[in-house]
Length: 326
Image (cartoon, rainbow, N blue to C red; front, side, top):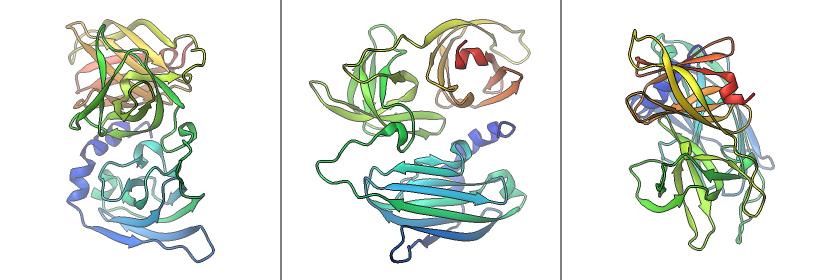
C-alpha cells in the first residue's frame, strides 16, 4: 500500500475522467426472501468496470466485504449517480460498514487500478453485501458518526484559522458549492461524516447554535473535540521545525510547522514556507491522504520518518513523533 501511495492519489484525482471513458456494466442486486444479504462471485479483466446497484433506506446499516484475488482490485461506494464516492477503496480498503444517510439506490463499483488495467490483468472476486437495521423514522435519532459512515469523532472544533478569519460552510463537499454559513475559531460542530473530493477531505457538520446550520467544511480546519457542555481536553496542537526544501536539488533547511493531532496517527499539519504561506498535509493512520487542492503529493518512509514530495519539487521530512505525539 505504501509503495503505490503516489499512484493511488493520482488515480483518485483522475478517477472521474478515467471511469467516464470506460464502459460500465450495471447489475441489480437482490436478496433471497427472508435474508438480509447476498454473496456475489465474479471476475474482471483489464479496464472492465461493474456497478452493483441495490436499494436501501436512511438509518439502515450497510456492510460490504470485497475479496479479490488481485491486490490491485478495489471497490468504491456511491449514492445513486453522484460521482463523489462515500467510500474510496484504494485509500480506505476493501471493507465498509456504515449507517446510511439517504434513501435510494447505492452503487458498488468494482474495478482494477489503472496500472493493472493497462497490463490487462484479471481477477476473480467475492463480494458480500448486507443491509440491516430499521429505516430512520421521524423524529430521527442522531446516529453515532464516530462509528458510522466515515468514522472519526462525534464532534469537531474549528481550528487553524488566521486571526479574525472565519470558516465557510458550503452546501456540498467542494469550493464550487454555495456558502451557506460561517464558523468562527473554537466553534464546536457535530461530525456528520467526511468524504474525499480529489485530495481534499470535506466533512459534513451540524451546528445547533442560535442559528442552526448544516453543511460541508474543509477538514483541514477541524480537529477532534468534546461535545458542547463537556470540558475540553488540553489542545493536541504542537509546534516545531521540520527539514524542508522548496525546489529540486535545494539543500534541506528548516521550516516551522504546527500540527493538530487526533488519535492513532491522525493529524493535520501546516508548514510555514520560507516564501510565505502555508503548506497543508493531512494524515490518517500515519499515511498521507491529502494536501492543498490541486497539489500532487507522495509519501515515502524510512524507519520512523516520512518524506513528503509536493509537485515533484517541494520536500518535507515529517517524523512519526509529530503525527503520533511523544
